[in-house]
Image (cartoon, rainbow, N blue to C red; front, top):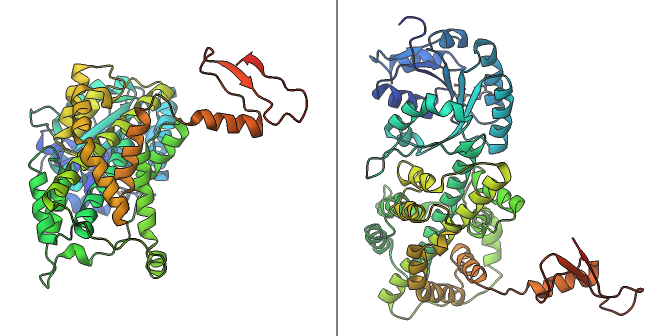
Length: 486
Ligand code: 2AM
């Protein structure tokens, strides 16, 4: 290979990085591989990439960059945080204006905003891309969510869209997301939604297990059947597989797994961002808290000895309840995605991103963990109404929640009576009821705030923006009901 002939360099040869290289090579691109621990480069070439003429190893950054055609494209698949900044620093002396650095790690979006600005000031282009689908996705087709310098998109588009997963219609699950940190923000939101989807499935599982008393085998059949209908998704599919998996002694493995969940932080970031932006993304937040509560295993075991609740089994129509749970799950899922989209819309406003919401659904349609038939419905909704303000107001979703609503209410009611926690299913319903309320009790809240802190309030019979204060106690000086404009 002569100088300047490779299409892209990829730094970071953990499994994700290696698989992306092999995926790119499968699609005819010539890729340079480099890693901090250089011996990994040789191992990769000798084994996983053995015999591939279009995978080149480099033993230094200098050598890696030398092999690239211009403008150069260098993709980082290293640990998020400091290592990304360190590699950018190391790369800078070897690059020139117009070259592109791509970060495919799970970086927090504020870091991507900062890096894009800093590199653009130096004449370089930067892409922060979400990569979802795990190791298998990286190898066979991930969902890719690139954002950053818009001028970089035409330079990486072919490679990205070739290696990305494809929808059932053959469209690539990769499109330009938006400016600076938009790609990593959308990936973060994807992960938050993933937390929510998983929690909803777990609540359905527990209701059926504890409430209905279904066996693991029966549950396996229920989830397999659900996967044939509108809930058709990767997460429901793997749940059915998990429930069918036996331990070495022939017992269901799921029963032997400790009920204390871990997390890596992207769900938490979504929750924090929602609080920062003032968007009620309640379902994802509950999903994060549900993991936190699960992790308090020892405390729960001790509390279970002391605290009591109903000890009831569901004694109604089992088949009807099963169908109720399925419908509740679908309705709550719609609320979760509605909240996720509300969050992205507000983040776009805050950061000046021009997000294409239909394209985001398309990117999530295949390759990633939340892939589902349902995302096709979201894409259709944005096709129908590109500036759709809220998913719940799309005619398809409105119809579904109307249809599922009686079941959803029965399930939440039953869960409360049985004492089975369903934080995600119930917060979704509370959100739905709040969102469709023309009047909420915040009038009283505003009165309380004005009472103790003179925070003022607006009136229903006066224009918005006109503020009033009442001297509620009649003491404390001469504060008449004054009004002024904010
Ligand atoms: P390594 O093989 O030399 O450890 C995933 O961990 C990838 O990120 C690996 O390629 C790893 O390189 C790289 N990585 C982890 N921490 C790093 C650091 N502090 N600096 C550079 N690369 C790092």
